[in-house]
Image (spheres, rainbow, N blue to C red):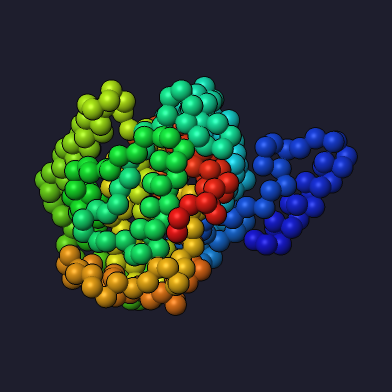
Length: 366
């Protein structure tokens, strides 16, 4: 794959030198590709040993190394943006290809620059509120697993900064995201892990330790149980929607977006990722989200609270997994969440907050 990338880069350099033009908005950018999208001529394994040298386990020569995912055809690869600007480039480049003409699951919704512009206009270049301040919710904890000290400090930094910048800030108290987590995980495990084991059996590889509990082979749930899960998910989505609408009751203004943890810790220590609910609910509702860097764990200020009383057994495991020395310097990111199909809005708010954080980081109390 690296040799292929270097050859492509050479070809692009030659094209630019000869024509003076670029081949699309991503010309020359180094990119990373998640190993679940098929690139013609290369293995795609998604982590399964049994997929090496095959097409998803099949040795059919008409398929092996011959099929390319639609997203790869459109962008040559899926770019995972590492800056706010890169995220916008990815989204606008993707949508410029009219992917809804090739994939019936994609909504016909081009990038709306008007929404982006109107949202950005609500703050000045330093992030200070203008005529229509943003209204941002802060989700401190889901009440199931308490975030580690670095994450809580990151939330405080954003909260305090928004206050200084004269935007509206409210606490976020939606329907329990534990409910959404339960429903979403039940969907993921509905087949009794048969698909996962079918792929593992191709090579005989075992489940890795962190997945042995969740993906033990068992009977799949019934059709009626699956249908009931669908109805539960619909009901949760409606309840969350009603709560969001209620945020205008006091001042007539809806919350624009919510800032919340991505996970209860600053970074993932292998084998100690005990809680995924901070993103499970967002996945279940298909809401728009962007993650921005806020700070880094600092052992001198993010001390271990020995007096903390865990809420449950998993919360105890997560809390005891926090070691200030181990986490020192680890990045703390927070997610900015808006409603479904509000990518332009969530990107613009991420841009405002990210810029303000960079400009004011030294001024915000740690």
